[in-house]
Image 1: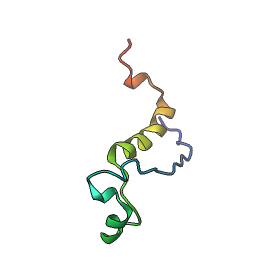
Image 2: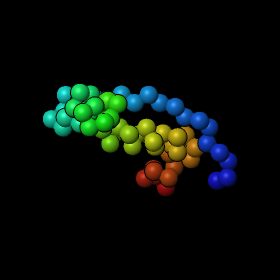
Image 3: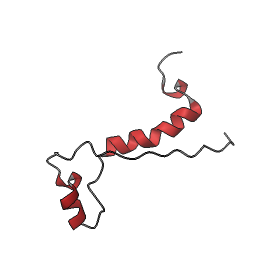
Image 4: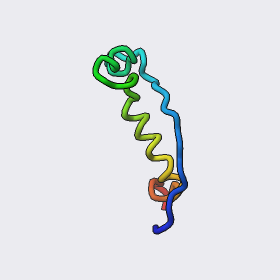
Length: 65
């Protein structure tokens, strides 16, 4: 794989604002120096996996054949 990936942009959406973990809350996260509440790791992983999936397709992750 020598070709470059095309730019991929996404605007993260915090799905856990009401979570018991208050680092997902904008106000609490700002007190610790963040610009807003932290987006849950599972969401970040999904955002990061998308470009690889577009590049290599689903085959490496498929249970078929």
